[in-house]
Amino acid sequence: MTEPGDVDPIDATDRARERNRLLATKRFRGVPLLPPSDPDDWSVLGGLSYELHSTLKPPFELLQVVFFNIALVLAGWFLLGPESITSERFASIVFLPAILASWAFSDVPATNLYGSQPNRALKALGHPTRLHNLILGRDLALWTLIAPAGAVLSLLLALKDNETITTLLVTAIVLILPFGYLGIAAIAAPLLPYHSVPMKKRFALRHTWLRWGFAVILPFLLSTPVAVLLLAPALLLVEVFGKEPWVFLLAGVVVAGWTALVRRVAVRYTLRLTFRREDKLRAYLSDPALG
Image 1 (cartoon, one colour):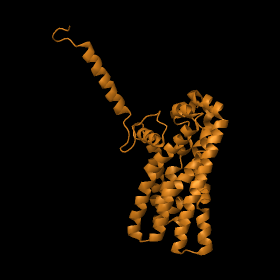
Image 2 (cartoon, one colour):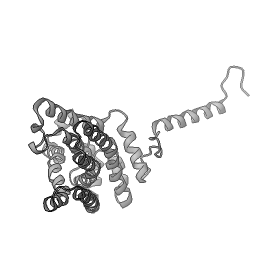
Image 3 (cartoon, one colour):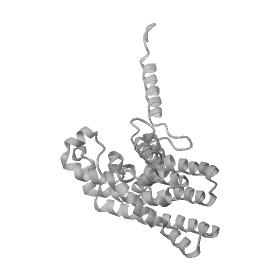
């Protein structure tokens, strides 16, 4: 029996449990219309929720990368001229959304899928479905953050330039091609993972500089060849049949199917590489000192 003013230990325990439950709920609250964010939820929607939740909390690493690349493009486009960013053929502002999207996607979040989340990657190793959904969750998160905004910007620019066909093509490129690029970029995940460490520590790990430096620039090196690969069927159709509206429509359908096929093949190859290198990956991801 407790005296007046004393705290009932049972009530205190219940309050502590409720407080911990609320803290856990707050910590892992999800995104509207998606499941709660849980690193052990290996469904596609669960992975997307986890990725978006991780992106939208400090230190906002993924957002910093995306906004930095967008700022570089805008600075080059408006201060140095479009030719500093792209070829003269695509220097019209109607192509700006596609250029912005290509730079926003072309960075380490697309390639360092395992090293950027080693604990989760370790749990996924040896489980094909987990690995597939880990890759897809990151790709969907990147797409959600970048592609819709690029599509809206493209449509807004159409109101000024009135280039309907070109605008629709750019919008389709912004919405469809990223899945193909991200699928191919994922191949680097089992080949060139690296731990996310502060730059001060990175400078101290001199033996990692060459490997890390190549891993950082690799996404940019991939962007143009992958774009050519994915757009090749459309370019061929336009070259053979001309710039008729039905040709552009057919080209869009063909590119969508081709992009889906390329992504499927690339992700399967990524999973195969991951299984072959599982022991090396497990050892590397378990030791942040390796850089």
